[in-house]
Image (spheres, rainbow, N blue to C red):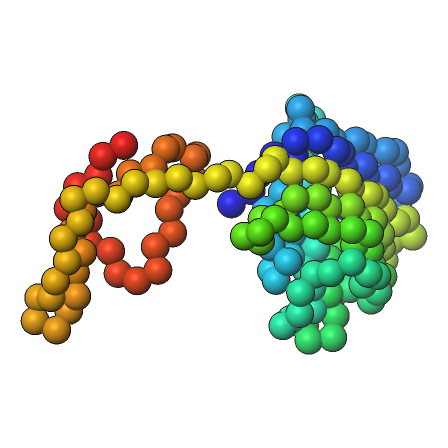
Length: 193
């Protein structure tokens, strides 16, 4: 699940002979383009950026079993492991087959009470094996506020069927554009929106 930033931008700069971009220059993406960010501090963040001529897919992941926290992640690999963070960048589906060098820095990261990304600032650079050019960039975004969930439970009845507990009632909440997570097993008889 990805969200569009409230403000901020992503800037990507490529040198001649960069394998991924295939052209030198600087590109900037803002929320009014297609710019979305998903993920978490445990899985890392994936950024999708597009305009009328191209699309980019960037992934910043912590080493396996670690959280993504402010700091420098040197010697990143395309796929993270216990000792290497993950950095993967593609343009129009074109990515490094192997990384000669890659690193990124989480300058700052803030998360809301339920773990939703609030703010993120980072820098990155990579070079593909066999390429003399590098690809680098930066991103600084502010995400929309975490939605407030309000709900109502009505007509509750509970009891047991055999050894299985049950609750019967109506759960209603305003539409949020997302879903509702329920821990356990849910058997739904009807849904009212």
